[in-house]
Image (cartoon, rainbow, N blue to C red; front, side, top):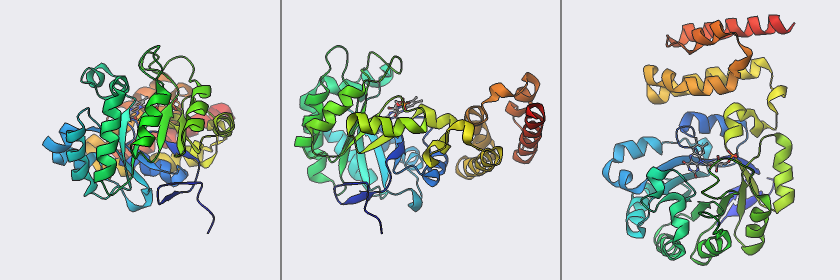
Length: 321
Ligand SMILES: Cc1cc2nc3c(=O)[nH]c(=O)nc-3n(C[C@H](O)[C@H](O)[C@H](O)COP(=O)(O)O)c2cc1C
């Protein structure tokens, strides 16, 4: 057996690239597809601590996973250490390997309550949360953060607060809250975090192509790389393929498998409706004619839809020939 790439406490991780948690995207069907293609860890979408406590069925659906996804990380957000602990204890029963605290979400609906990246404004609270959770949970507690709120880039202070209070890993997206998802991610800052702590660090931001995985690792020394938006168009990046190197047969096979999983997870109607946003990305629909695009995106029975896709592919290939 080969040695793990790194470990989160006792949990070995094999591989150095993984799918980033993405609300509305990293559900079981997409995560398991990415994990199968080579993503090293599965992170759930973030779920609010209050929802875990007040809407247990909603939360249980969000956290549904399969054994092949392990190590499985459940991501929670909240701002009260006591509520986060209560929620974490509740979902620990569902069997995750790791529980992660979101300190990066920049959405107003999240930050106005002091959650997400809002937590980075209160390092004392970060310390309190990690101390309480790491003492009371049986699984490791990890954190995903940004560089800071605005110009006040307190990422080193937050990273140390996480480590000193029992946190087992830090994932860092190299942007501030103010930057949102624009501009360039600051990889130098990720390198500073890696140098400042002993726990594993996952670097994140602007990994778009296969070669960026090694570039970010070399630039920062980080243990692994997290890939978000690029994986929506190219989940095959986890199999170390750039989009232009993925064969039409592979795309078709992944599409079919993903649609099938979506229907299994959400039921036929919702499964297909929710699948369309992935299909748009996978297929890079720009290469289809307007008419083909319209037909493919129209709701219809899965079998008809797959037949249409096959047709569109043939036409696309004929045009290219
Ligand atoms: C649609 C969307 C939803 C996201 N939801 C989450 C989330 O639930 N939890 C989280 O920690 N980060 C979330 N993020 C941030 C990503 O995990 C990642 O940090 C960010 O996209 C930067 O990586 P990238 O440049 O590879 O996309 C989200 C990002 C996007 C685009």
